[in-house]
Amino acid sequence: MSGRRVLLHCNAGVEAGMGHLMRTLTIAREARDRGWAASVFGDVDAVGAEVLRRMDPELELLTVDGVAASLGDFAELGRDADVIHLDTYREVPDLSSLAVLLSNMQDGPFGVRDADLAIDANLASERTFASPERSRSHLAGIDAAVVRAQVLAQRDARKTAAAAPRVLIVMGGTDPHGVTARVVAAFDRVPSPVEITVIDPRRRPDVLSAAGSSRHAVQVLGFVEDLPAIAASHDLAVTAAGTSVWDFACMGLPMALVCVADNQRVGYRQVVEQGLAVGLGEPPHHGLEERIGALADLLASPASLARTAAELKRTVDGLGSWRIVASWEQLLTTRPSVEPPSGLVARAANVDDGRRLFEWRNDPEVRSGSRSRGEIDWRSHTDWLARSLRNPDRRLLIVESDGVPVATCRWDRRSADEWEISITVAPESRGRGLAASVLQAAERALAAQPPVRMVATVHGDNVASRRLFERAGYLPYLPADDDGFLTLARWRLS
Image 1 (tube, rainbow, N blue to C red):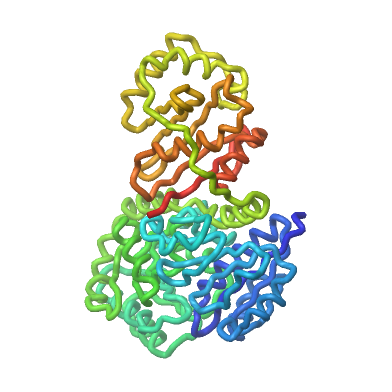
Image 2: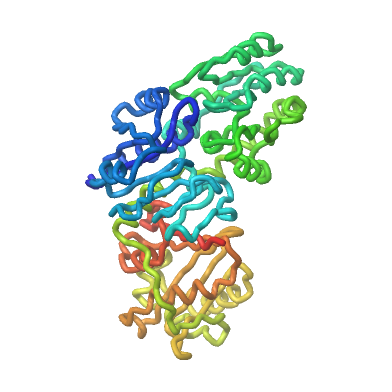
């Protein structure tokens, strides 16, 4: 048991929808599974409270009006909390005087505020992250997407064969533009038979009327306890561009997206531009019916649906909640520190550095912390050095103090925006407290335009190396693998 407590604030109900609550419940579950105590409070109406009780009857709900809450209310509720996590677009009081770690979920420009940890889990949010200067630490992009355990349970579910393609229509709890009924009616433009399931908690008359007059087999369901289990049996989801997008992506369910609210526009455009979903349009939804009709070709191509499903599962790995709670745990123990500029300078390595790099690489202490722990011979080393100097996706550096080499760093590009670092301090330079300055010099020398995710892989038993990167602001990215190596990462944002 960690003995720690988190207080999670969100808004939920008929008007606010359930997206913020679903994220909050998922993060609370992850924290409790890791030994935390957790409570939820905020502007949660009776419908939202009932959903919370159904989804997690053991989670404590403290009903406080999130709009009218005073700093005193927060102080009273959070006086024994280690973390306050906010997931709301509404105004909250100044919390800077509270002795807690403040974690904040923002969606593009919505919900931005001062925090110790800022999280924007939208696709490609690393490129559009709003006001990164307001937080010391950041989790950005789809890797921070919060995915429920119910979703993960369906990630590898097998679909049973059906006579016709199966389509799920779900627009969330609000659907302010009445899109659901229009989508149901528009499917009459798809000539081949389709089996349609509609999720409409209010069971609105216009939705029921459209379903009753459809040329297809349509079933309308109200609130469902386990939407992922229902979704797993479908071939395509027509859905609003809200938080459920990442649930469906993690499951590998192809999607056609409708933007139904202003706060969804950025995320909607990013997902469609990345080719992860078919775009059905933004308010006022001109041409919606024609776009629905065009889905006929996709529904008639099982191979296209299968390719899309595989790509979606590769994009969303389902570890977002783990990354958030693991970051809380790290930041409560080790806050990032800003090192003063050092006199160390990193330069590009060259062939004349070959003997030095060879001796450093074969040092027993260096090998003990590496994945490959055996000694290498001179021929293999020179071949490696020649390849490294030619490789455009590698930056091999020598770090010097007053012209004297004290360390080497290597950056390897893992993807378009991601570089992995490896650091070796010269045996004769150890014990001088140079590691933080070496890392700083290496980061300065990485001449890549932001956004850049800098990644470090260290063995869990290598406490010194792990603390080096933690103090430099690198957050948990991947749990330890079978060999005991874990991955930390830090974003350099615009």
